[in-house]
View (cartoon, helix red, strand yellow):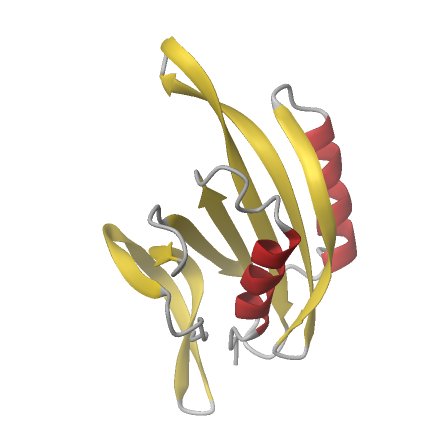
Length: 165
């Protein structure tokens, strides 16, 4: 899997946050079909990093971009402390992908201390060519980062460059 980011961004893996359980070979390329990886993205204009978690599962015929988005929206609307912000569809390597952003409440120091609102972007992509389903989650602790349409669109443009086959 590869993707492009703006020139002033930094991308680095998070140590010990990678696991490949199975893979498939398609046209002499190996693609992970079960596993996960966590990356750190540092947008050029911000000092705090964004956390990108990628989880890959086997192909699910019944799960589509539309019904994933519907289920995810219902899940967020039913949870205390989570607020749905934006949602829609993008094109990822020829596949219809769905995304949504929301805010979730987090305690600073487990029980004690104040609360903070993290911003989350989730993207769902299903690739029939490699037989896998991919879930992406970007967590931002940067106040207002995903609230700004420009920042969200920049991140969605990065997702549209992902190669899945």
